[in-house]
Image 1: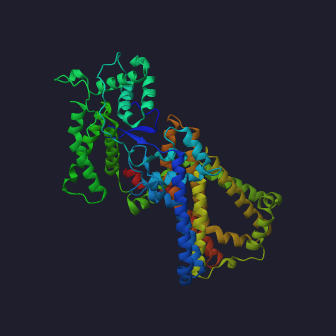
Image 2: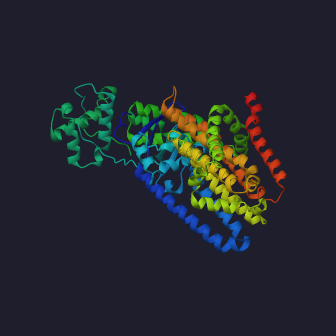
Image 3: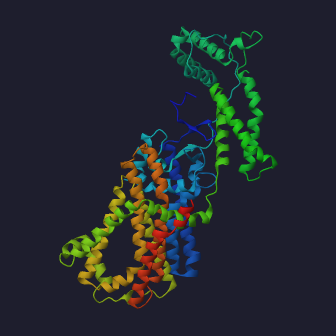
Length: 255
Length: 323
């Protein structure tokens, strides 16, 4: 759809030839996921340290315990994210709690190689501190990719589709053909307008429909009514129906 | 077909796909799982049609989410487990080194030449090495490889201390490998910096030990594990340079595509370097501290260097011919 401009939807063509929309996640929500992961990691460290101190240390002695702890720290530092992201869920605990997911830019799940690549480059994304490089890089790329994402060809997206409220509303407006031919983008805008209009206050509807005054040639409520009429016409032009359509109260949504 | 009719028409299909995917995602596929690919394609087709007809968002969003879910399920592939890992190290890694042999020799030269240079001038001009090492470094080297030291000073008697040392070298040296690689994305500068820094430091240590210590202690200690360890750092820098070079000179590719491609090429190098460094950690933890006569140490060390060289030169050649 031609509506990808004002939102974070990014089109990706799958191998099956269909175009899907990915909702890429921005720096803010990813920072929160990272913070949660940091806390989870700290918790794991704390738990393992305590366990090592009271359970392992008396059994195998100081040197072996210290060595095992170093190994454990090494794996936590470099492979915590890798293992979770390459797993079935494609997300670390922090990312999952923020409803995020790491995906390959091809639309598929992340491979182990990609997970290694994007996480090993965290060192550089972190520089000079607090992921400054990564955040700057994210702000300059369309898909909010940090350096690791660029090299691994991955993207962080929202895992679930946004909740789409589907109020059942009858829009009472007279179906009318637009006075001029509308481009596909304009048609899409109209259709989305009528789909979402029930969620807004009256003032907001009027405000938005006033923007379309060159098309409706009427201000205020009359313009809104005409705009809704055109949207209804786009949804179901009269010509396509065998029987004459009801002039008023065509139900828009089926629950 | 009106939009409402269309929606009604396609509903059974996506509901079926949803049910199939739920089954598969919970690892409980039923008999009709064979219909999954066909149903998936059908729903993809429906999504295209819905997008083209500008169907309501709740419909396109639902189909879109289903398409993503289905694609994840269908495209999931196992990483190959240990077999793939062994193959990566034994076959793809030496192949990748040979494929980029120019880069390998550049990195090798950049690592060994400054080291040899500074080690060679130290006996005549020790002030260079001294200023590089600093007073603390010099004290440390005196205590480790001083004139009164002997190879026997480094004997570790217990398994525990060897294991602790092994873990320390994994934690420290493999960490350095990974960081050297990561630094490469900054146009290669990071990798180059680590490479040169380590080179000069190593050179001054050797030079200084020759100047005021007992070189025998040092050489018997490092000769064996030095082979995989130094090769490991050179190759991890090489992996970083591979990525950095694609940023500087993407060639005919778009820079972003060149970066992705270089990342894929660098991965076997990086993993191979990490494995070499881990092998070095094993040697450094358990072999190097053994109390053996120097001739034994030197011959074993020579074997290590030859083994690393032969491995990089010959391993995986047959598979390359077969492919």
